[in-house]
Length: 246
Image (tube, rainbow, N blue to C red; front, side, top):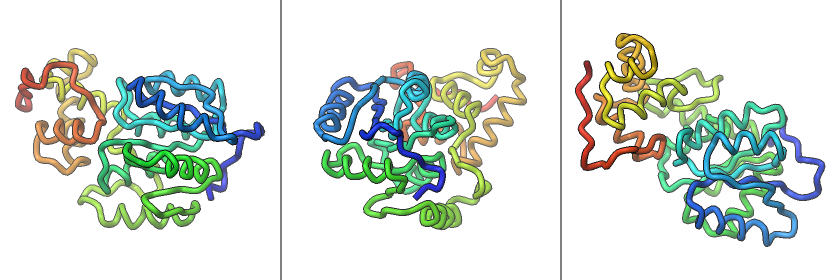
């Protein structure tokens, strides 16, 4: 179990749901609310609202999608876990692969689940997360077990290996911001102008992005980010033509 985890004094497991698809969000609300020991204290469609609601309602668990507008679920997870009364975070996603699981757990998630999970199984996982445990697949781990699992995953990962002592998010907030602009077809010059930084700084960030994602060029980086749900297109994909590096 997480040695820093504390249940809210409320006798119920207090949950916030974060998903920008109203039908899915309502379905989660209904599935969770029928449990006698659960209370859905809030729900919302984006990460910034989730952070505010978490500070306001002090939930035991936040259930969040990865693919959210503006701020993705891994960024939300990391920021939630930095709050003074940090909730456990259960990540739900349609983008399921072993590297994404590692990203989520290093960002501070207590569990990582595919969106097609059975409601009964999700309820069980939320209970385990609220109790301070960590769940990946069919594995339930305490804090020490999670650290061993993460270290094994980091060692087996790409040539770029971040410091295992740090909570890992695949990209920094600035790199994620730049990759969002790249994915929507902006050149380094345009990104530099938008962010009021130099083109060289943008190039340095792009070099870091390619290294962290273990890809060869900005097109591959954009495809990786879209596939994992880290960024979203704000233009028609048919009109997308990524410029070469300036």
